[in-house]
Length: 396
Ligand SMILES: *Cc1c(COP(=O)(O)O)cnc(C)c1O
Image (cartoon, rainbow, N blue to C red):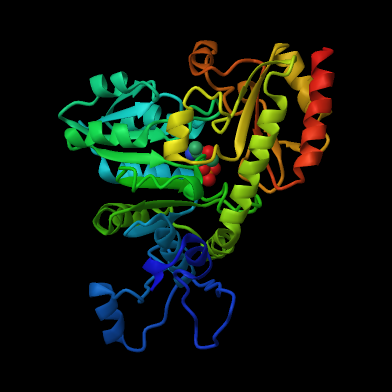
């Protein structure tokens, strides 16, 4: 049975539904609608459709169901709902469960669009949001109140890679009956099982490591069957953020190789971080897997490996960061992550440009900070490339 399988077996086989043709690779059911044999069948399906009965692709589709079942099996979740993007998952999970007058506590260091949803969208509908430093348990404890409905955070903060303690925050939240929603993108399902660590709801942008090759946008919300089917599904299927069958197929195929890719990327990230740590051109090298990372014990407990992203802070500020980026030959300058291609980003002028100087300073996003999403290239080539680019940057 699926539940007894190891992760790599689940990633390849869980959730497979074969058609009458017995195809090996999962079929793409590129259909919006489904035919009923009789008017009575149509009526019955709208009344109470069974587990393998579909009505309309916004409500569900066989290829999308395969993806949902596979990622749920992998994550050890009762159920999952697949969405059109990571942001459809984040906003859907929060909006489906909250109402005016509710209180939410959130970490401050968030992906820009997540910050927008919490700061600008939820508050516009009368939800009160308190922001805290995600790494400071005392701040969580002070902010969570008896009337707090939800806490939200990214388990590894972007781009400064602080790790947020899922188990401890879940205990604090559960003491007040609040639901814990974790955006687990940077940790990936390979390194962190947020549900087992205490979270109630886990959210992924499938755009990142699940696709892993930069092709499609997607997302997924995982949790109890009750939460997914009674709270999330009615909201998502009526507001339109469902995943397309083609995207689900891309993500299904991505899941098959995710653990191999992500482990290889994390191993290379550690090699690179160790090679440049202490380099003359750098203020610091930030990688959760480095022995010197301030939260090393938590990283080992919660993730095992340090993930696929590292950041470095160049002494020469923006001129040095730009010289470094422009000297890179193997990686590319872009803003996605989790790709097979190494991607380098200057957060201060791109992903976090919208923030004020003060907000960036509070989050540790300096002018010299460069984020590197490590790809599948040979570690020797990446190391040589980064070292030559650091030489160029140190001459600015
Ligand atoms: C990319 C990302 C998202 C949003 O995902 P999309 O698929 O781009 O909508 C949300 N949270 C984190 C941490 C991300 O990295």
